[in-house]
Length: 435
Image 1 (spheres, helix red, strand yellow):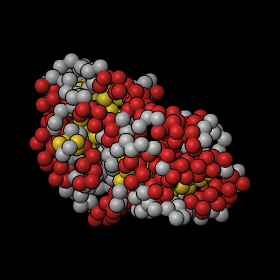
Image 2 (tube, rainbow, N blue to C red):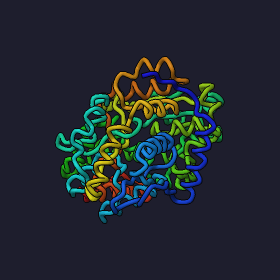
Image 3 (cartoon, rainbow, N blue to C red):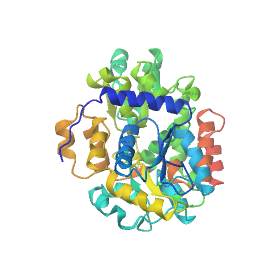
Image 4 (cartoon, one colour):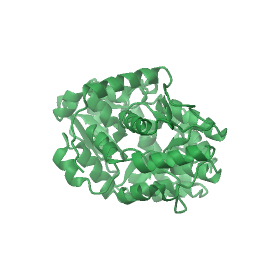
């Protein structure tokens, strides 16, 4: 397989512009049949990021199957999460269900919402990084397959902003606090945070908890252990979060910053903020919005800082091993078979892998080290690939790892914590009540 990694063409830029328009309108439908429910083959997908890869896959399928076209609707991230939850519960989901695995997938399986994919994933399984593929399995049975790139959470920074303020890239939490103070004094938002979307705040509690206490702390939550949210590591993590807020780390208006509009990354590439902790899914947005900054090396990236005395391995990562496709149990048998064929012929195919690499995204496919190193325009793909390949533990985003009700409670309480409306002890008490 020959892979060529480069900048996107004008046609792709045009596609992104169309995607932005669709997102602004609340989603757009691609012709080909009913969008959800009924007998037709359908899918809902997300705008931005790797949208162009999905569009290429859908177009490829429709060209080869004119009598069995897939109908697609497009949604921004937050709007999709709300709609798919309602649709699955009502038995009116699309044939292909886009998800993040974890607690949501476990609920789907327990409620009979998705089907066993059987041997339709056999060839794909052989090509996947095993730790990523495992996230699509429940009790050893495959109910979901990775559909796009692997997405660890990374600390991005604008090197030009840091240089102007005389700030070094922090490797420890104490150094991060020092950087916050210096950038604030320089009149710059130290760390961009999309607090209006809330879920970006999860990245802070996840990394801090892992660095302080290791992955066993959150595993106790998943296991439903009594008082798990009051573990000293979580209390220390939430205490440090409020320390950062009070130090002005996220500026005064982070509660109005929205991730769906890429407002947090825009603060960084426009020089208004020094850092942003975000998933590697934002890298294509950086490439699109600030190609000069990316190509000049002005956009930097590093791992989350260590915490002195912490028990967690500094090579542990958090984020999304990938996004996943599952097949709805409510779809007609014919639509289910079409979906399985789509998975076997289109998902992370050679063309899809190429499309991902072209935008700087990293597919969860084994054996890409040399290709990425030789052909990438920047070091970012190799950096991300190495993080995933070498991580002792890759923790799924907590809002996806937990059951839906507990996940919503986590987001609600975490937002209050960041806004100073509750303290760390109140956060733990409220979350312990959800176990």
